[in-house]
Length: 361
Length: 89
Image (cartoon, rainbow over all chains, first blue to last red; front, top):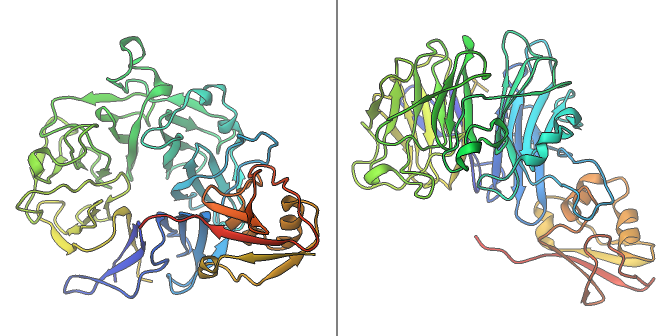
């Protein structure tokens, strides 16, 4: 039975598709706690969550029974230091499974900018020092938060040692050797708000999300602070897609798993006005590599809407037909036809940070 | 030995029995109290050993002044209260 994990400001919710539609399945886990990241590891079925408790800091839990029970584990930790200003974990922003040849390996992208790796199913974590000690990391800065953070971790399905990261704000980073060395990529990304002579500086870019095509991993789409970009060489170079209607601003992007020319976005007016254009929520889809976009709104609110879709809250399943989308207003939708039409699953959830399709557990 | 009491709000996440531990400073008392329970420690202190931003620690009714190094003195008869700051919904 297909399932959907929904990480919200006030707990982790689960929905299942029972043949008649999607319905909430059981009580939420971590009720009233902010859930910032959820991962269902397809290799062994484990669930992992990151929490950001208001008083007591970031927490990390694993479930080995589909979410019926949870075990708290020590979260990633920054190296101890005597410096009163030494960094400490501020948020687990994304969790990613290692490759099929790396059972038990998971990655965590965090604020204030550290990449962590666990090789024992989250029991222990190690900060990736080669990236953390890159001299140019000092140039990273916060995008929407006080500190920079890693929100996109792409593990190449052809080679688990090839890793691509998206950093707000620190651009795109690439490792060919499992994280032992890193190079800045993301040439061609452009930040209009920077001084003109720095607009194309790769380390100053704010990619909101990177999404790779599962069957063609060199094709990476990027919803960037400044617009939509696409790469055909694994993120080394990007081309800007211009004149996107109704707007090129947004956070989320989903890519068809088999058709790299097809991708979905959810536009907002612009960075200083993060709501749908004219109060009309639409999803946009390109099927031709960004030459044209279609606005899709059947089943989305008819009247005025002020929903914002965060970067981890628009996802597609393996079929390429089923999508799910959750908003900061607490609305949850699914589509069974590639976004042509949408069904509202709930209008009463807390603000949604992430949606993720799950298996049959 | 100093006595340590925790906010009942913490009980939603971890067992919080009243504890007693020796030490001349908040840092020393908490270090002994949290020995063997790194996860409980992580609720009160960050990985650098600093008091979490929205956690308050009182010694005999007085809020500690050194939240970074936890150097405030503690006597053998002191009572430490570990509380959460108020926050919104």
